Length: 275
Ligand SMILES: [Zn+2]
Image 1 (cartoon, protein in one colour):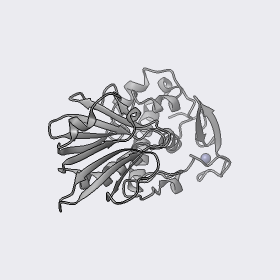
Image 2 (cartoon, protein in one colour):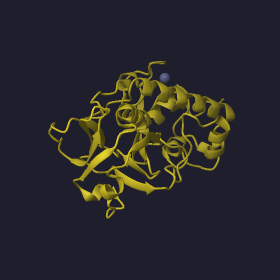
Image 3 (cartoon, protein in one colour):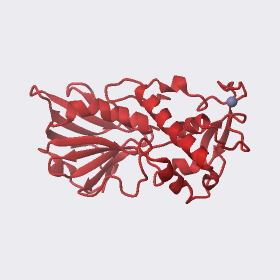
Image 4 (cartoon, helix red, strand yellow):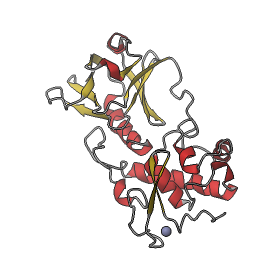
């Protein structure tokens, strides 16, 4: 599933091409990817100029010149890509925007999503964040501490909750907990101040490094230009069950927590470890 670094890479790869350009045609090929489903997207956005594209959590938010906004969520298998109109559609292409290029030619932004957990969500003039938590790249240690103090859930599950902090998923939570030496099952409200400071630093460092490597490609993730991510080669725990810890050589353990795989080093992230 695309997480913050992958979504950021998609935003970066479409932003420079689409900003200030006008949407000349909208081809909605599957109505059930739209929310609300009866919304007339084409009537609302055809002829409008794209004023801004940014990421909020895992959402790709488009702001138009009339201040209306909508966002695309990639879900599990969603992909946004740019193509010349003559290029054949990939299977499961559900939505196509024709956008006028600077030189007068057209480029198509296409949304494909085989499993359809993603979609296109109309916001109108409402805030793109909704009830989403703060951004992990800018959250402060006191903010993070305050949010974690509200929940008795395991730290791993708490960090996956988008209303607590927005944009983290399985990969980067596992990697950040490893970097900060925190066991994934420790209760969120039991973390010490030092542990939270370390976790806050680890989350930022992990995400920045992943963004620099254009995210992680596990199966089929690509940015909008078709470039795969490279961060998967640098994972220290995620997907490394049974492999030697890169620090202490102990075998990496995988457990299932809340239905999700969780990877950690039982030595570097021992439960008794404090401060
Ligand atoms: Zn270790």
